[in-house]
Amino acid sequence: MPTEPYVLSLIFYTNKQKTDKHMLYMPFVQGFTLGASLIIAIGAQNVWVLKRGIARNFHFFVATICVLCDIALIFAGVFGAGSLIASNETALSFIAIGGAAFLFWYGLTSLRSALRPAGSLAIAKGEVDKKYSQKGALLTTLAFTLLNPHVYLDTVVILGGIGAQFEGAERWLFASGTALASVIWFYGLAAGAAKLAPALSRPRVRQGIDLFVCVLMWSIAATLVIKWFN
Image (cartoon, rainbow, N blue to C red; front, side):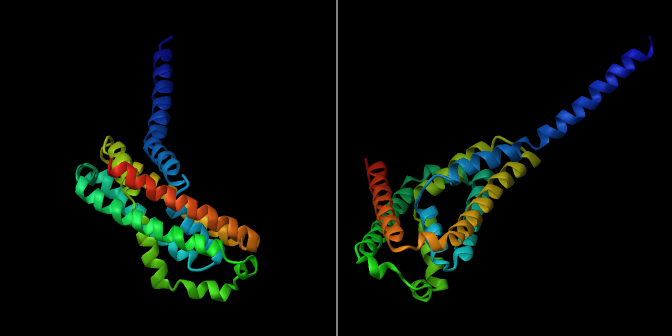
């Protein structure tokens, strides 16, 4: 039948178009999945956003700063800065020292908060808001974000190294996928913590959270010192 080869070629062409269309979005999906797997891991930055959400104290502002820093570092890595930062061990060492000192200090403040009598932990919302002004929230968020070598390794080196394998529009799609993962995670974390604030603000729960934060901050600080100076 003369029409048979034409029909078969038409079916093949149509399927190929669908496949190409689906393949076009694969870098975006890969970027989103990989970005989420790196961002969601428990760390100092996530705990800070969680605590601001529980306090309902500039929590969306803090989430916005985290997102903007992530996006800037992701795009810097994907479009060429990854190898430059990865090769600069002096800069990473200074970041490790500053990050370890900051995390130790923040862990100490959390420990002092946890050791207060249980009755004093029931802090009124207004008092919590007074603890961090918008400027204080901004500076602390930047410290948690930028004084952590793992942030650069995750966003700039790892994501940047993988994203650099794509070309043209695919590279933009990969970077956009990782950026979207950051947006969803940080705003979701801030909103979820604020929603659950009544339960999480109970004295004993806050005490447990403060102890957990202290242990986590000191563990990360110790890891930074051991990893970067051994």
